[in-house]
Amino acid sequence: MKKLIKSAVAAVALLGASASMNIATASESVLNDVLKRGELQVCFDAGYIPFEMKSKKGDFIGFDVDLGKMMSKAMGVKFTPVNTAWDGIIPALLTKKCDVIMGGMTITAQRNLQVNFADPYVVIGQTILLRPGLEGKINSYKDLNDPQYKVATKLGTTGEQAVKRLIKKAEINLFETQSDAVLEVANGKADAFVYDLPFNALYEAQNKGQVAHIEKPFTYEPLGWAVRKGDPDFLNFLNNYLRQIKGDGSYDRIYNKWFKSDGWLKQVQ
Image (cartoon, rainbow, N blue to C red):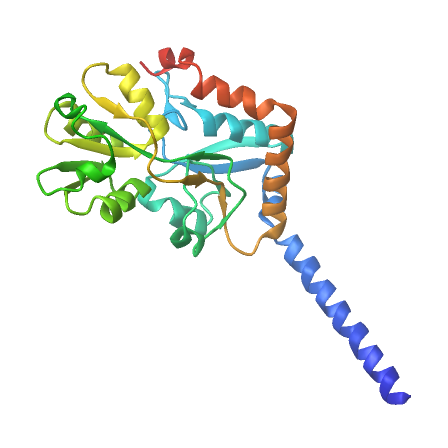
């Protein structure tokens, strides 16, 4: 009987210790830091149309920016943009230069080893912009998988991964920015540009005749908000918030503004 009582007491003590650990973990959530500071620091790399851009006035605008502002308002805190070069954006998050990445980041296994992702907030894929002379001759990424073709994309993106995995026989040229890469095609120095559907669709619409767009994505890419590991409270908040705005229509209003309308173009042109 004594052994049974001792075991029960030990179990209770263990549960108490576990509960204390959980409370400690909860108190360390980024959410508490955000509320104490009164600001949500959001990392992105401005230049990814229409997710995040700089307006002619110097303001940050875009789909992710509006989502971040709406989330900050719901939290009762200030939205603070942290514009960061793409190749340093995960290190910026890990070294606490921002609280969350809301920058059109594709959820990949490699990235997931470094950060945790909330549920996907939008799904896109890689598409192809061709120099006009190849329209009709190149109908899919498979046709580009040939040493005679030059393919451009942005360094450090899923576009680079897709090209190296699926179009590896082609000559691959990598650039620091998507703008520099797509200009290679527009100027006839490359045969194709591989990048995310939203950017390519908009670029073609703005540059009729300079490029041809193969619109059907050849990859599946869910985009997610990224946070540091070990913070289930923040992930819980992000997932529930996303579920809420998709249910009440506020997400659709922002999505339609940036993806189904071009009224915002005057802010950047």
